[in-house]
Length: 381
Figure 1 (cartoon, helix red, strand yellow):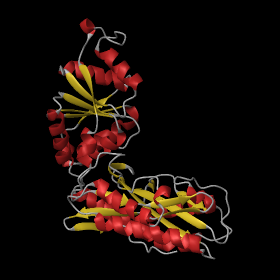
Figure 2 (cartoon, rainbow, N blue to C red; figure 1 turned 90 degrees about the vertical axis):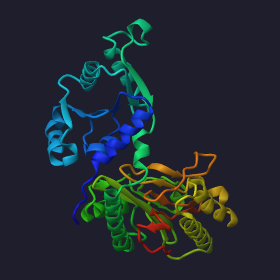
Figure 3 (cartoon, rainbow, N blue to C red; figure 1 turned 120 degrees about the vertical axis):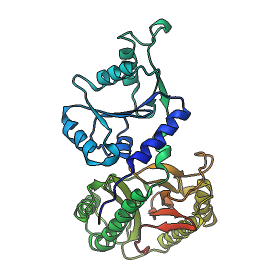
Figure 4 (cartoon, helix red, strand yellow; figure 1 turned 180 degrees about the horizontal axis):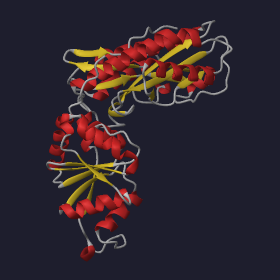
């Protein structure tokens, strides 16, 4: 596959528009997924500073060469200014902010620790202790939430191409490996390691999260970690795994039962399949995320299982494995109107202590007349 070129210029313009609405002179971005989204930087440390017309990538020596390669490797980033933090990143940021004369500088409240906020505030005020007295105040650091994340909710054509390819790769892994590795006498941790290896062999850079293999009663724990438990005949097994491809995350869950099958498990499984199918049929532009959640939740209530479905029906996918939009109850999270280009999971589940759990998850892309199911793996016991 020819990998698409991400439209960084359009993304930067969208964030600058959000900055203008918040009356910000500049925005300091420190959340790594947002740096990757806006300029392709994937280091573990660094900051991107935007004002109305320029972008500055602040890095230490470890990432200097990679940062300069970004600036020369994409036409949208030709004006990206790479700044070397010679002593500390915060000192470099403070010097840049004071030198530019900005007065309202946004920071990401959800990702900047209070300690760092205070340290940067003190540096901007010439080393004065925090809290700052009015006469010692300098440029204002303005907490913001979701300025970049809201731009990420609707995927552009390049992102959709990557997510489609990644979902096809993940589906192939599931179809090929699950029948071979899930059997009695194997430990959960062994199966998890097999899945992780298969993801890397398929072309994923790494798993998108810690792979879940939850057998027997462990399946009643929605986020159980693979243990040394050995699978036994008749065990239900929840397998939840995903990968990162070109920086984008995909996610899939299937539940199987080792022979012999039991009537109670078949009842749970059929109910979750029904909820999964109702939720997918509810996905279309203009509906509220809470309505999609209701389609799954009400179906499970009709089956008498509403009390054992305790999480949301889905979550957005992109540069993070859990991002907006969240497909949840209106009383749990404000509903969002579904738009074409959104990509999220549909994953109803039931969890019964002493019996186990069933969860079925697929990734969907919202299109003009409904949704496209990106993951294509048979749903069967």
